[in-house]
Image 1: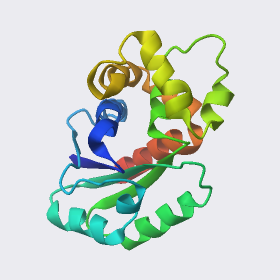
Image 2: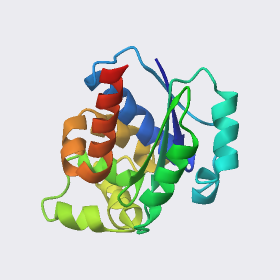
Image 3: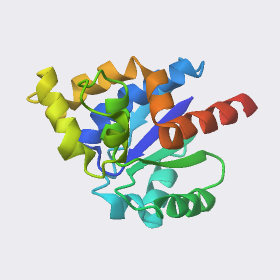
Image 4: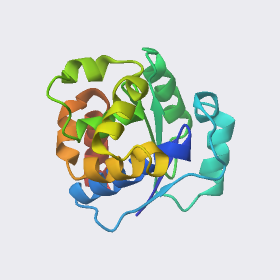
Amino acid sequence: MNVMIIPEDPTKDHYLLLPLFERLFARLRQPRTKVIICLNPRMRGINDALDTGRLREIVTRYAMIDYFILCVDRDGNKNRRSRLNEIEQIFTGKSVFIAENAWEEIETWTLAGLDLPADWAWSAVRSEISVKERYFEQQARLMGVANGPGGGRKEMGIRAARRIQAIRQKCPEDFGELAKRLRVLLAAA
């Protein structure tokens, strides 16, 4: 099975999303799934990622993909889910097209899989709109990986993916829901 993850900007997000989805599909009993990150055309922010013309270009170009998964940040926009629902409806067809928005940023999913400082309340991390600046970058420094690829994202993504179940539990409205949807779709296939 071929799965393409479409991040709103793959520059740094690919370090987080690739290990998370590889581990998720392995846990969903799909260990031979080939997960790739969409790099061409390269999305350059939320406007590109929500543009149906750009998405149509990807779906058309990569007709051999079985599942497309659009992953964007919610960024405090409580209406983002309704836009993602519209996009999913547009792209129903031969391939499965799923869209999810991370609360509030993709980096939150990674933090959910890591051991965080004892004085950080998960509820505060989860609800922070600027989680990248407020928590993620600080965690990268604390782990000693901030100077690594993607500002520490490569190492943090790999470590977090080892605890995929924790991510599903701590992020039930977004990552957990996405995992449930995939489990149902895979069972029906």
